Amino acid sequence: MWLINEEVLLNQTWNELFSLIDSTEGKVIGELKLFDLVYLTEIDNKFVGNGVYIIKNENGIRYIGKASSRPFVERIGGHLDLRKIGSFNNLLKSIVKKDLMKAVCDQSIAEAGRILMNYKLILICMRGEKGNGSQFKILENILIHKYRNTNMLNNHNKMRTAYHESEKIKDTVYSL
Image 1 (cartoon, rainbow, N blue to C red):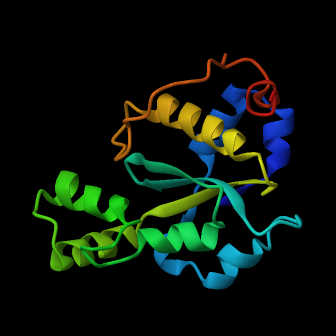
Image 2 (image 1 turned 60 degrees about the vertical axis):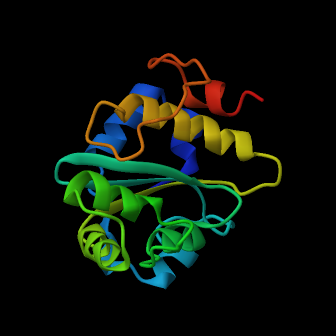
């Protein structure tokens, strides 16, 4: 399993979501097809694929991001830009700096790209309706806050929304 449907966000608690994330295997990024990110065939929704994504390896969660203004296919694709001048490939640049401990250049970014191909992807799908960007940001911030003590590459967010692990997710994310 690699897709978490929005129904989880509407019906479960934060603890239940955290348990689901921890137990979800994810899909190997190097095995993804464009079709997987465009049609999200494992769930029956009528949206183009927005939400929050989680990238993990055998040691745990490495990166959490959101696809709110652009669909998953564009946002995940942006992480795979192997050029030093790429503007959306900060994940690869972080792998170069923190894991490979090398200077950022086209060659080291390509090396990081090969590493990223073995990582796994989990998508938390949300409706891509106009004006709900804050819902994506709330979910992303809470997840980064929850997993910040692991080996994450983006653990620098500021917690802006209070939540209680036993409360329903919808009371925090969809309360606006």
